[in-house]
Image (cartoon, rainbow, N blue to C red):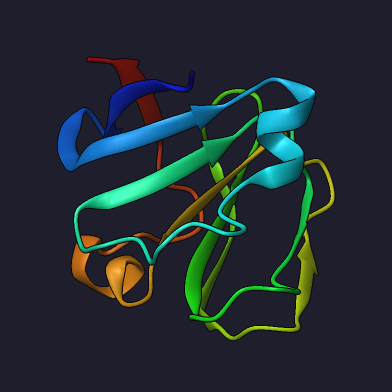
Length: 116
């Protein structure tokens, strides 16, 4: 069972429900065969420096962070059948499409997951 936590941007709560995928099986499955995320939900996959949306039926916003939680790359509205990666990424956060804009995530921001 995946842990659930919250995501903070520069120490301010920005996402209330974030699943942590850290086992090999959890990371491999990710969001495949799951219903779409909703606003204010996300999945943190760690370790993870690349993702694909093959088999997905909905777009995602994707953020890659380094081991310290610094945003390296933010991709908006990544549609199904795509691949993405970031050099030096330690983890990936998958968001409901539109959340990068709503939260205002930019390269260099500090993101931190905390268990609920």
